[in-house]
Image (cartoon, rainbow, N blue to C red):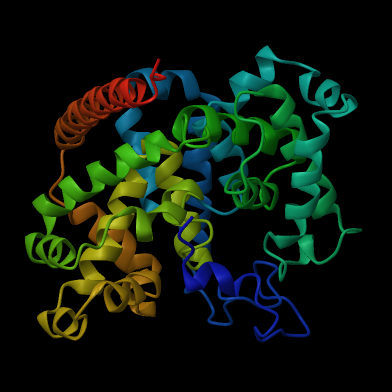
Length: 364
């Protein structure tokens, strides 16, 4: 998996560590911020909270008759005090929990696949190690992270456990009680990122092609640059998509992106990726210094800080001239292309097998 340097920073022992956490619970790492967030007025916060609480109380009505209002309010940013409950409803996790009472506790009682359990144990300490919840094995964060990942591996044995799932689960546990986090996690893995974590990564390969097609539409000069230097999307976007940006974006930006992601789905991750790629390489001067694959990847894996700022990402994401139909067209195009490639590969394999068969016929 292509891992950005920003992701590596979350596990770097050389990162600057403070003696006290920031407002989000980080002692260090690139997602720690000492810059105070410009607050809304108390009246604005209360007004937004009231709107969201009313909307949640009448959720089914809004979802069926006024979804646009939900989407628009998510784009403005969900109030911090309401965010956990809003995510629980946006993801459909509240329905999963309602349909499956006691399932989470029952899953925790089961032993699970021994090999999978060992993988989870080896991986859990790597997630947000500078956050107060995950500082050591005795902290509740690592215990609950193990429980959520183990429960999911039993709940969906077809997927089991994939390393890219761990930061998503850890991220959700920072906002929700363990059982609620589990059901949001189930929804994200099985609906939002459906089939992303199945061995072979066919879906992410397909989405890499879709991203390339959308980039050609939204930023032709950058698309041509990547084509010229043979910079394949999988080399830089895999971590962004598999981890749903949890290891890439500054914290406040990540929260805003997830507000939109849970309302609008995977299209949001595509849009964020397009903004990062386009803004990182939009200037001719920058592209000129990127004389090959390695230089280009270095820029994409470590975008300038201002490009990842909350307002820059959200505003530019909304300005992208993309319709739902554009995604559908690219999806259909990539599906047809991959089917053609598969048919050609199978035909080639058949010819090779026939040829090998003839060569291996013993001489009498």
